[in-house]
Length: 211
Image (tube, rainbow, N blue to C red; front, top):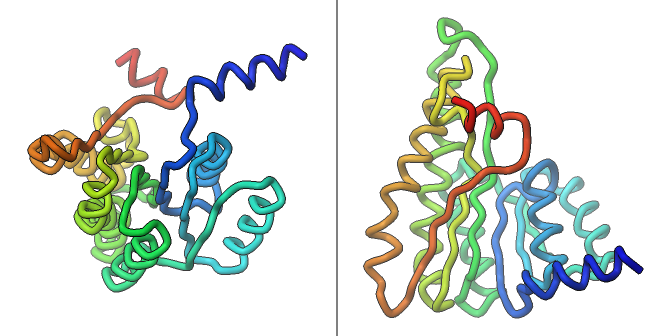
């Protein structure tokens, strides 16, 4: 009974019925959790992943839970596939999008002296270019919704040194994009967009707050 009351209170505070969301990389990890949270609160969600079999398994599970989730195969490091993804989202959501979650990321634990040009290209395309371009592509959909929201799944490595130089550099770039999206978001007075940052309750967020 107490659990039911708790869920009821939670739902009354965070209802997302009628809202639409795109979450990149939703087949596992934080992206998977975000998809479930948004869908569980009533949002209609589209997600993407590189591996079709894994994505299909997730979609089946979400369908069994009664979630309104669709998905498509997409490698967000590809400009063509990003454009195709946003075209799919626009078609499914009638040209409107309330929430864009830039979740996809990659991490290389190699020493700085061992990092190759291919590693640099992969990290830039995955952690920075994909998110930046998806913001651009999503702009008209977010504007059409009347109240768009952009979320970046970034990292403490972007603001403090944690011995992953390449990853940290790209996440720092991503964080700077967040800070500089003010022209993207707030010059549209009649079509407000919102770009938020915050912490997840994990060990790294405690580290950041202490440093």
